Length: 75
Image (cartoon, rainbow, N blue to C red):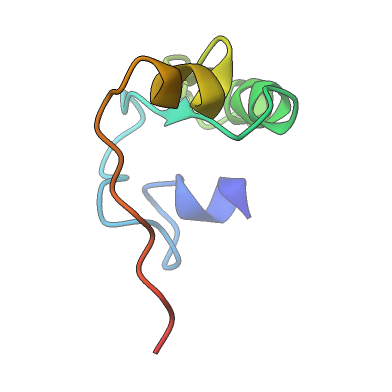
């Protein structure tokens, strides 16, 4: 779904996906999937050359006590 959500021309795009120069930072819990997702965004032909992922991922973020906003529960 990445190609739909970050493509500015897609009707299913995220509201922030307004142009191809968007800075996308992907992260996950363990550092596996996000690296693949960032590479896929760069390779989709959408021009998302600024897509990247975090080194050491969420666990490192939390360990440094950076802010965390809990996900909203589905209603």
